[in-house]
Amino acid sequence: MVIKNRTILYNISMNGHEVSFIKERPQSLCKMCGRCCRVLTGSYPYDEILRMAQEDNEYAKDFIKLFEPYESIEAARAVDKDTVDNIIKRLEADEKFDKNSLTFYHCRYILDNNMCAIYEERPTLCRLCPSSGWVVTPPGCGFESWLFLKREEDMERVRKYKEELLELEIIKKKNHDEKILQKIDSVEKKLHATIELFSAHGSKDW
Ligand code: SF4
Ligand code: SF4
Picture (tube, rainbow, N blue to C red):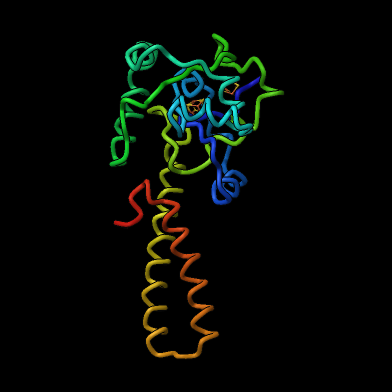
């Protein structure tokens, strides 16, 4: 059994963009070092994940089944200092980040030889990760360069959408047909929604 599919920031609320991203991921880039199963964090505070699990959220339930929280950030740092510091550094770029609500975890099923004890039955959560270019991986993770390229693609797409929004503004000023204006309004909403999808990563400034 080999672990082919792991990452450090497990996402328990995947959207369409992230699911489609998975189809293009070159899994052979994984070095099978096991670091992302030994020290990781989630995309929600632990209390929130417990609450979501009680409400039957599939990813939250899997998350709790797999991962045990470290007693403190220092306890996680004792296992993999570079990974903990890398995650904190990346998360601090988000102005809403609150270090007090950060919990690190380790998987109950990672073996000493870096293999996954439940590889064939591992949950969707593991199969889907990394689910976006914005996940935070341990330093030296085989996916680093590829994820960097995917982030660049996201940024390029957002810039293009912003240009399209400006062009639509100009078209709106020259047009008074109610049906055309409604269509433009609907396109604008879609473009804004995509830009908003990346807001935690700074899309407003791209
Ligand atoms: S840290 Fe990266 S290279 Fe190592 S096992 Fe996880 S995904 Fe693979
Ligand atoms: S179940 Fe397996 S693949 Fe998933 S985090 Fe644990 S060791 Fe890694």
